[in-house]
Image (cartoon, rainbow, N blue to C red; front, side):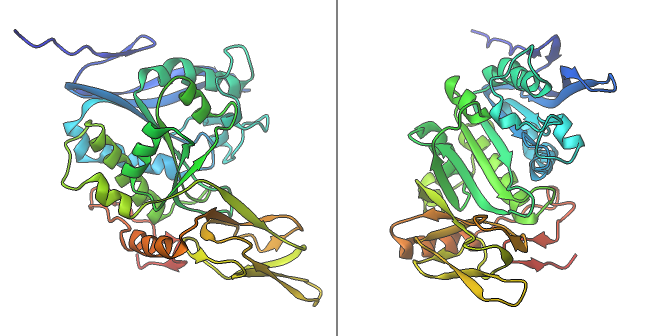
Length: 363
């Protein structure tokens, strides 16, 4: 019996034939200067059937590692062997991206507006387009994020507690840390969960800055998930090997400034800490005492502020909690040694800044 011919990918009157790619513009609203707000996406529709994966960036408009990861993904020669469909959305929050801002022009957070409304605010309309037109067409989602301005994150995956399908994708991604956390109401992750779509959030680096580790982890992580889902041919290796370099935390907390003053960090991202370990200090700018910042629980530094000024109560160090710190320390060493290298075609513009080693590499 002859095989059935694969149908084109259809969305809002656009048609993408099997074995081709196309850029599609989905209308979402109108700017103040009467120009349209559009969500631009690239659809790569494989010749052979398979699942559909959506990769998104810039839900927060200043988290620019995401668009760079997606740009390099679309340049990869591996995509030519795609089975199924890839939906790549480098910039979800177009107004915030144009303003170099985390937030929409009305100062609202797009990641708290899902599922959105077709008659609501501009951000709510963007959320509605994503909810109605994109998420239902997917079998899985990878959402790319960074920390905020001056708050870099260690490469990490965020997944919903007790979501096994998403957790398995997180293991395949091979970031050093998986943080299981409850859903936030009205978030992108929450609406994907409601629609039964596995989703992982990749957090790495900081806003408004490109950095090599985040980009490399991101590109290779997405490609690894695509192989796992059989959108791409698999490589040698196993999930068992992946587990060795990925540690899972079920809870995290922030160490905060005990007073206001000049803040000096003394520990890097990815380091394990025990109770009473020194993390840094806050000093009185008028020559008063230096107040040490000590760890009150043991874990791994997964986020940190680089701000030199702190008010009393400011969040300084984000620490993921673990019980067996000795095992975690060994795994973090292995994870750092396994920082992926990209082939030249995907690393055509190497980014010299590396916030995790705090060194500037040679150009």
